[in-house]
Image 1: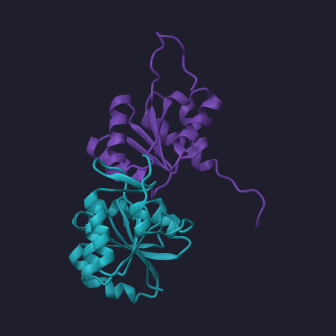
Image 2 (image 1 turned 30 degrees about the horizontal axis):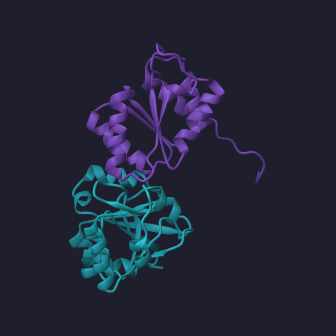
Length: 138
Length: 162
C-alpha cells in the first residue's frame, strides 16, 4: 500500500473493511491502491477457513481496532455479508454494502466526504451505475 | 427431482450453496434445519436475503424436519437440506431417512484439526461421522460440484497443515 515511510509515519486511516470470498478483498484493495494510491483507506479481510462465528468475530475486532464503520462485501448470499449484518446489529451502527466492485471502491477511496456512511452510499450508486454490457444480443 | 444434496455446512446459506450448488443443480428450494434459526425471525430474514427470489427457503427445527423430509423428497423441484453441524444431520439420518451426507464446510475452531481446506474436525466429530456411516449413510466431503467427492475413510485419514 502507498503509505508514508519511516518510524514517525502515522498509521493509515481505515475508513472501511472489505471482505469476501478467497482473495477478493486483497485483490480489490490492491487494485484500488494501484489506481489511486489510496488503498490504505480500505482494510482487506481474509476469511479463508473460518467458520461463520469466527468471521463475525474477525469483522468485529477489525472494526474496533480500525475505527471503520463501513463494510464492503462481495456477495449478498456470502458468509461475510451474513456475518457483517450480525456485527452491525450487535453494534447498533455501521453501514454494509454487499455486491462491491472496483468502481465502487475507487469512488469510496477518493471520496472527500467526511461521513463514511454517506461516502459508502454514494459509492454504491457509482458501482451500480458502472456495470455495462457491450456487444452480444441487441 | 427431489432432495439433491444433504449438506453439513457451518456457514449454512452462503455463496457455495446458493451459487456453487444451486445454479448447476437448478435448486429451487433449501430446507434449513436448525433449532435456533427456526426460532428467530431475524435470522430467517437474514438467510432469505441471501437467496435469489426464485429460490424458496424453508426453516425447520430438527424434530419438524425429521417428520417433513419425506414430503420434500416427493417435491417435483430440486432441493437442498442444510444443517450447520454433524449432530443435526445425525438426527436426520436417524429419524429423517437421510442416506447421503455431504460434508460441505466445517471450519476452523479450537480443538479441531484440519483434514481438508474446508473440513476441520474434533475427535468427537470424527467419531460422529463414523457413526453416520455405520448407520448406513454414505458420507463424502465435497465443497463444490466441480470438486471430487472425498470418501469418509480418506477424509478422516487426511491431515493438512492449517
